Image (cartoon, rainbow, N blue to C red):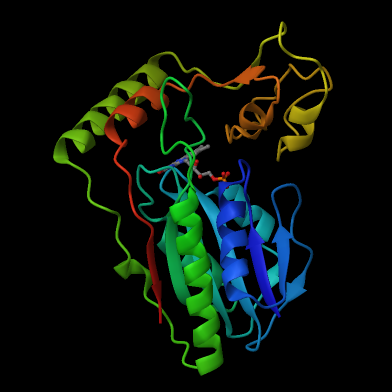
Length: 270
Ligand SMILES: Cc1cc2nc3c(=O)[nH]c(=O)nc-3n(C[C@H](O)[C@H](O)[C@H](O)COP(=O)(O)O)c2cc1C
């Protein structure tokens, strides 16, 4: 059986996995762990699992690890996929590869796709609209390649460390680093825990934000947020049909200004 196991708060990872499965063109079982942990699942070497997760802070999103912890391989081939917001995926592919290896999986393919950044807004767009048609076509083509390899029986272990971030100008990196230093200094002096807020003029209390929140951080009033549970994934912001929720991330301007250039998909299959 082919499985697609993914966490996706704002659906960009879900779209990429969907297109890959379409490209594979065989019966695939989708396991969405955004709202609940995976139920214990044992797989073997005749199965193939696509593991996909967003990049948070240059790593595989920690919540995706928690939700996927209960899956077990036995030399099971897998494809590891990370989706990042056009800044950098840094260690996320190595991280997800290690996570799956510890559970008995052998990565035979890897990819880093770009998805609209969780903090992207109309004023500060960051990879807005991605994965776009070109990305979706790339994901389908990657799926087709996987299918061809499965048929040819020549799958090999891929060294994900050979997949590197797309280069960024020194100036952008410098601007980002300087921003991070200022931000960390501010946070150490006056810590601020940012969470999405609700505009009560626009909110119709439909409860959609509560349903979309992967961690159950929003109270019944559609307003109060438990900041110990909120992971700032922005599922509630992007999913609110009334545009009543927003998160003014201090990261949005610096990301928009320095990581605006379209990055390509980076992938490898052995
Ligand atoms: C807490 C947090 C940290 C993030 N860190 C990064 C990062 O280090 N690099 C990056 O390019 N994008 C980063 N992003 C953006 C997400 O990786 C990106 O929006 C991704 O497409 C979200 O996937 P999803 O739509 O499946 O939830 C971050 C987003 C959040 C919420």
